[in-house]
Length: 213
Image 1: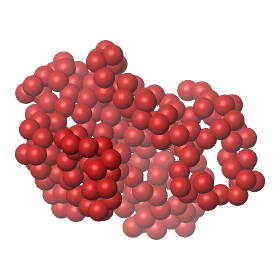
Image 2: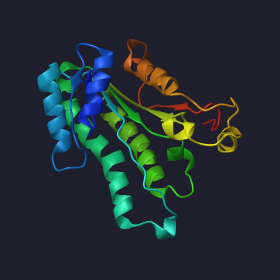
Image 3: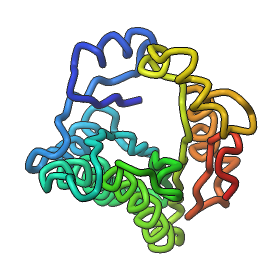
């Protein structure tokens, strides 16, 4: 397994928890050639890439009429363009081996939109559309491409919210709770497994019923 992030120390700590056969691959996505080099480094260390999970993301929220060009550009570059470049580089080896799993982490707002998040919503909608195109192009080579679209997920950031703020978040969720990282991981694990070998071009929504799509 390869782990990639800008923060090498965090990666090393995470790798210790996961044990042997976990490779640390520091990378700052968005820099010229970074995505392609990451795939090269991963293949050198691991031998091959069977599964690619595009999970990089950031937010630069702001009202539509006040959103700065640089905030729009940065979110699209990291959330969408980096995923395109990583997948484009990774499928070369996958096509030769006639096997691969590409999984993009999208979001509920990529389907529903969200005020103040035009850039983020566009990037996640783009992830879904891009993945469908990729799925159609590589299906005959034994490669699947799918997305997981989380809703509101419990994180350190949501833990810091007041009880009132948490209640407002969950009021529109039929399951009456925030999702967990494990909920998202379960969907990713399914799409990466042999059990999902006939599933491609799809988006699994993990949102507790908040949006029934």
